[in-house]
Figure 1 (cartoon, helix red, strand yellow):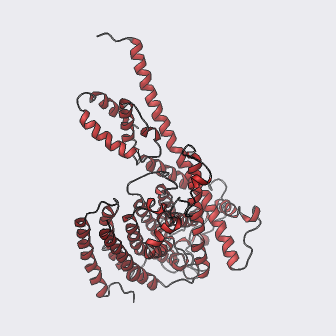
Figure 2: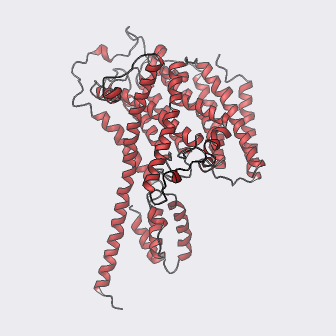
Length: 178
Length: 356
């Protein structure tokens, strides 16, 4: 919202000179707006000038604005219940045994942050192999019906390399949990 | 050149009108968000009630019956009770991690509701990445669980947190591969024809099964609920928690279940389409495009109805299947689901290449 007024003033300047660039940006903004729930007005704007200003507004209020607002609201939703029990939750009768670590009734022995099983560690390392695979193939898969054979085959080559890596890891027995 | 003062005033008033419209648009963003938050809160209450009633029916009990008619207010009563409980902080734990942990999981699951389409263009944030935002947010959840497991300084909690991290890392990959295979096709538009015969479920049966299993594992539901196994790990990373923080874990798991079943509905079960062949809803009720509110209400109703009907599957698996072992779980993830979902993706791609 803050960035809107310089944008509008820039729009006023550029009405004569830089119409070309503006239309390109507006086309992009229209692409955004046509799919937006919150600005049904933008689709039916009639006059060109009004259209331009509204498109610019849509460009500023991009599709990530609801995400930010929702993030703030969900923070509130999780923080308000955390603060809510302070007035009426009982806190006076706390005795030290209650606060010690629960080990089914007996006194806790030693610290919990000692050594842990090494087999949890390779799992997070193996995650590194398929993770770029998935990350890099998502832009390949998302636009519908736009993959030419070249794109598909280059993706196949990428998959092949990563499959060789994970097969090697499998055959060396690194993913065995015994 | 002389400019009229009235002209200047008109320009100014127009400018003010513009900024007023911006404020209006800014407020208008809050309305759907608040409706969504309220709706998912209600949804979670309904799921808790459903789970209690169905489990009671499976075990031949009655289930909750005193709080409200048919015990429908039981979840609300439980939540109020949790709010009134003492907030215990473990004496030797890391208090900061202990406090932050549940909120991180809860917020990241809450955020994934942003991208669920409840109807045609009825999404809170209509991003081009869509489902992948859900996957990105759901990979933040194990960080919160690991934090709460480490912060508790309890052996059960620590191994529960480790298990949670390992499990959700392993099952995230098959889940994403299934979503990739689905997103090669048009997700909803292609499913709108031929009623339920056109669902993606029939075109991607392997993908559906893998998605179902991995989403059960991501939600830590019973065949895969090793991180919070009550019998062996004393509820895992939740052992030291009490009061509303424990309630957050509870709430987060049900929210996760609801979001997975909504995504199953959207990806595989035809989304908001009526899905009975030869019957068109607009013809049935004799409505035209003017009644947009009515159409929106119907599409939301259909999406939710499908999602809640689908929820019977995870709930019955929870009360009928035994738990797996940790090595079985990881082997299933890495040696069975991952190759199968990769093969499914390659199969879909080759079909896409053959038939343009």
